[in-house]
Figure 1 (cartoon, one colour):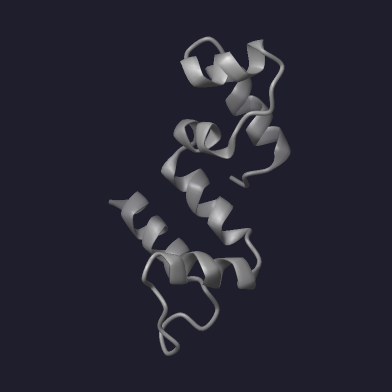
Figure 2: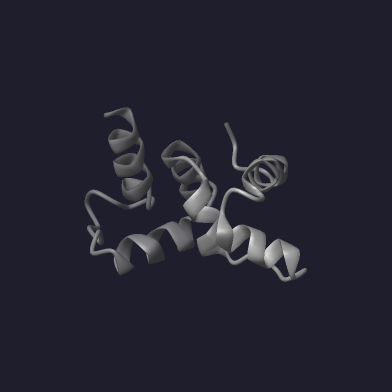
Length: 89
């Protein structure tokens, strides 16, 4: 499942009224911060979100999380692979 706009809209619609932070931002007509959305999505959806990042951003996120290895992470896919591995557990 891709983390597309329709998935985001479905997730927001399903969780409105069930999640206080989401309800607060929607009720007050404010933009929903990304951290709120990340609290609502599944681990698999999070992995797909990471996979949709550009190579530059995947490498930046990997480096920020201590996963900078020129030999093992040349394309920045290490973090998404870790997330998908954990999801499978």
